[in-house]
Image (cartoon, rainbow over the protein chains, first blue to last red):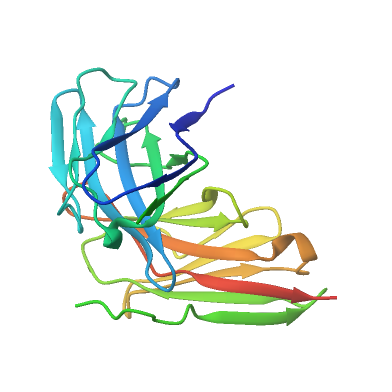
Length: 115
Length: 111
């Protein structure tokens, strides 16, 4: 089944404890992206990647890092999480056949709480 | 800047009625738009898309209208059903080939 898989789905952590949210897709997509979703603010993009070894900042990149060493994986790293990073996170991917993002396939989401 | 605690626009319709969800986009150079549906506890899912060389595109019970003059996009759902209750997002493809999402509209279908 074609899908985007995120882990963990739920996580409660404490301020300053580094964590990684993994994202993997099995569709050979070039484009991958991370979003956070907060009440009333919709989906805001954190980072995106047009292809392997190519990553760019989205609208809210502060406090996050990403890497794209392989086509299928796009982990989101919070080096020193803070309570304002408590949110619902989505990873998404799409083919790049028209250049960049197209119809996105989303993961099921990762709900992160930072105490 | 963004406002904290902004209420999500809502639309409440009676089952069987038609729904119209609106979206304003920012970039007159955007050439590709997508509507997504997000049900509770799930990630957004593709509904329908439209390119800027079109004014209208129809799917099954859904129609997207694009007005480039006023930079406005709408999603029409015919004969709205309880299963249509969800948050709907429009997205535009930006100059850098990236996607930008609107804040979303919550559709509630009353039986």
